[in-house]
Length: 416
Image (cartoon, rainbow, N blue to C red; front, side, top):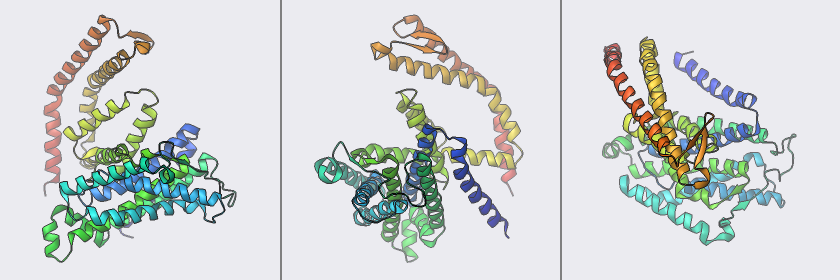
């Protein structure tokens, strides 16, 4: 058995093991719901990366395939409730078929051009479908949406999908299958040609491939997997609203994919996990979570354009070159001032947010009351933040030669 095959078995076996063990570790109701949401967003993000990362197509309307997959699935679920015989376990395939159908229709229109033209057409189609969701409430459900019952099909082998743990394992199974299928697709001639069309469509055309046809195939297939994610969302939440087709949903998957790293297959997985945690976990703590998410995305674009996956790859290279211990010494020197700057920055954001509402003008931080109406509170928070920033700058000047030495050693280790 070759080393590549063994490595693949270890990676995919570990992936399946994590999915199987996760609910045994995080077994509370909120944690199970969070895991289900993560699995759905991961499939959605991986499907979007088929366009942005693999084919170089920036779409502002990917929520169309996700939302229509969810909508058709909830309608099918209601048909099951009225006597239609179809296993609930395979309901995500209904969403996938819907996403594929709309991917074929809209892909024929959008893929005639690439680049900015494709992005603008996808934005127009997304806005058109979002408007339809409010114009035709009989089919789309309007603002109230359409609800269903995932237990409508009755028990099968004792499985009713009533308990959340059963829904989680359904999501996990489809997540594993979808991830494996999308990874396999990236290794097919179509996946390789999608990369070629992304990098140099003229050269791909010279060797006999039609770039529009390749783009069309990738849009249709990405719509299929986005529809699967939508179908799982319909089963998980048992309701589909107009938000599933909104621009905010398209923006969320774009940000998650880029944050994770569009140059890596596993990048969208990391991005989807972070976005879900910020939306759900951080969102339950503070309503200012979109500001933190925006700041994190801005920092990623400016300083880590390769996304979170590129950070993991960098540290793997440091480990292989036996330089990780030296890097950790730099991190340790920066840890305290960076933590202080982050904490003071968060305090200022929370003070600004709470100051906008008189009912929250005073709030507690680590047992201390912060009064946003007092000038002294703002002076103390601002001066602490500026002092922490100055400490970060001073520390970085002290350790930057050491970091430059690590970079030089890493570059020398890569030289033949």
